[in-house]
Length: 347
Image (cartoon, rainbow, N blue to C red; front, side, top):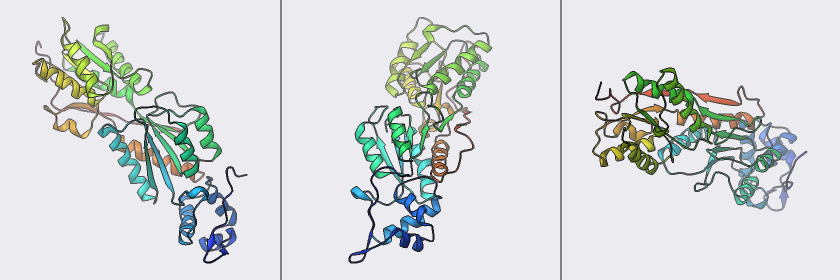
């Protein structure tokens, strides 16, 4: 059973109708397969779908409402304000190119949930699938996609994934643990943590990893050294300055992302604090600018490009009707030690 508006029979030449049977014959597939492609249903191998789409394009067919017959992959971001997003786009685009898919990119300008207009446009486009990056689709939106057989994969989800919604993330807890252990091994004990919003699992996991490392080292946690900040340079600057102006300031700061760490760099510069001689700094993500920072930044590498590629491959598997080996994929993080960390000056 299909949903939505039934596709109109395409025309071939002057007044001649290109029937489903003829499309099937030209593409070398069965008529039910053509119907599934026309109705945007899953269960068709990507190569087969592309062969049918090629026949449709050759004969000038367009779906009802003017939607293109070109297969697309929908990529939704809450914001496009840093190299973080670019790394993910690069991974998605690489896989999409390998499979002759176009990528449609939507930015929600800081909102976490797409609006009604986006939902209507996606249902009209009927993409091969949707990847939601750091975004939250409502239960109703997820149901609408499922009804139209449009697969959904969530990348770095902001909330706990609903039911069996496939998702891709990184080992954030391990990353937080490794970063804090590195600072402890250097001799630091006054270690501050700039977290992002703790309602987001990735930020909460990094904070929990920091706490676990401090607890394992039997180092008491000073509540003044833990700040919930925004994931931008401005957050790192404001909270970094507040930390450095404490009566007993930290000798090291671990941040939830590289942008916050860059803000801490600026806070240290403004207050005349030298990195790493007087303050060690560790970021998270390993964006391209970290190796050119002054000094080059120690950070936790998050495999952002691989995360995007993994999500795209999951969409392709689901669109072809193949079951996923894993519904939740977590890729490993890695501590990258550069020149922004050193033993505290009193050691």
